[in-house]
Image (cartoon, rainbow, N blue to C red; front, side, top):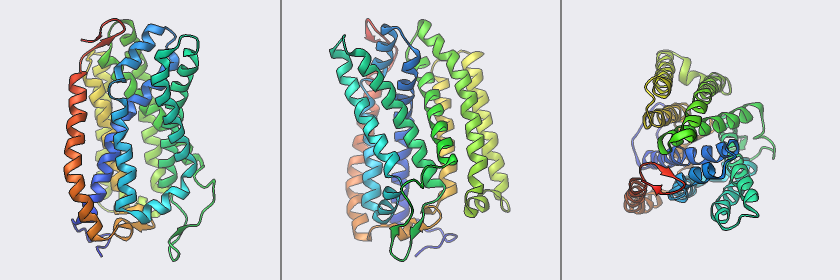
Length: 343
């Protein structure tokens, strides 16, 4: 079995990469979708709300394919990790799934009624907010550690272990970050007064996102000794400094793109880059553990024969999913408005 310091590129690492990739794609695709839903609350004009919803209506359900792929991949490729993580995070995960259901129903029913439209608007806003916050809380609960009985291979913590100041902070951070993605998405997809309002909102949301990145990044190494050693021992402190500089550089470019150059597409791309960089830092903090810092990916992995069987299916399905996702975004590229749709 490969050791922590003895890296080996094998099937287990490939599966860890595939699941991490699925989660990352879900975060960057559904993140702006959820953020847009939260920003929905600030817009009172029906026409603006219609435009906001129309900008994601063709792609929102496809975005959630990646969530299913990540969860299903975890169950199939790392069954031990699945059996340990799920009981520890049942509450935020159930809340997230229920919120996504209400939000999905709101997409369909909002267009079919005038009398009850306000109900489905609330469901869309509330579902987006609860789903985003629950994802952050679940991430915080995982990062802070899960109490397990390694001998019995079961979760040994309590029902409320996931609820801590750190997990709540991460939950709020994810909400704010998703709102930034949603605002920059609407800068790219809309025009006129709505676009200008979103451009104005992206600035404070960007500042708040950078602030939360700093708070969570400084807090995380002190949660467990393994995190601290990973970032602040020996030469690794140089890597931590480089990552911090990269975050500040991307943020500065995003703010200039919003206000000085007034770009339309670049702010969204730079906001996505922030998320990708943070996700990479998260991966560096956790690897090779899948249950920090108790169970490695090799300890949690399914048998080799199962990994090979699933990898064949993934090799066929992943290119198909990527292709139809890219095609959907290509077909519905460009601006959207209430009268003409996409143009």
